[in-house]
Amino acid sequence: IYTAFFFFFCIFSLSCNKSSSNISYGQIRGVVRLVDDLNNPQTFAGMQVTAENTGISTISDSTGKYILNGLQNGMYNLIFSKPGYGTFILAGFNNNGNVLDHPSIVPLITLGQFSTTTLTALNVNVNNDSVMLRPTIDPAGTVDQPRGIRFFYGTTPDISNENFSAYSKVYQLSNPTGILKISADYFYSLGFSAGDTIYIKGYGDAFFSNDYDDPQTGQHIFPNLNETSTTAVSFILP
Image (tube, rainbow, N blue to C red; front, side, top):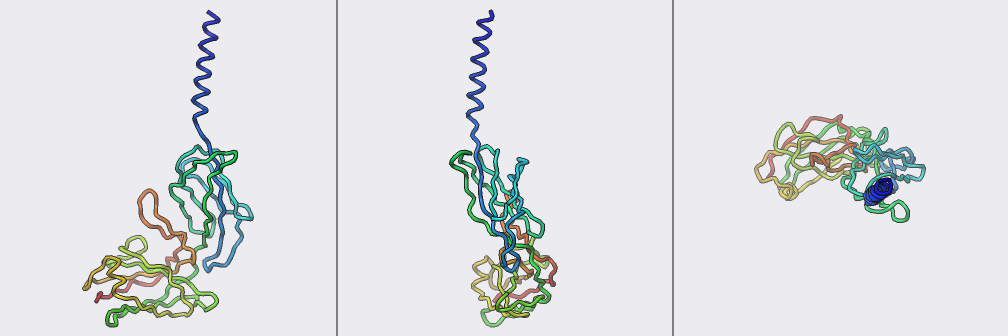
């Protein structure tokens, strides 16, 4: 009886060990570069990097390097957070390496701080087949240190960074008031049609805006916007 018991115990143990050995673990490594909202370098240390829903996180060192250990192979959303910086999510990163000699490498990521630029006024008028935007910002941008703004477009008065049909790139202003000439064709390419009333809402934004697509909702997120802004303006698309 003892021999039979010992035999079945060994078989059970081998089975369990085989099952455990089928679980592969990898190591995620990367480097993060940190700048302020005007693209001036900041210390690279102190960025927390978390694998979502795992409880596993790490902090970047003075060179921006970070290492995540203890993660099974698979897809992870990596969350980057630090006071003063808009939270950034890198969705669906594939941890498919191993711990010893083949870590999974995250491409270099540059993240910026919250925008310190306030949009204080915005005027719009139509000139033939062009739309002229005149934003005023505070503090003023300079040639050596321009400041960024971003616009959101929609067909309803409640346009905002959370309720929009389209959005612009970050425009860099080197004066207190900028003059932006945007063709009607540009708005056509965004899905608007001649005769549409288009509402525009602007915000100060960082040189690196940390924007991403939310992996849960699919909505595009703009973490570094300065939400202190002026009222929306509108025009009829020619």
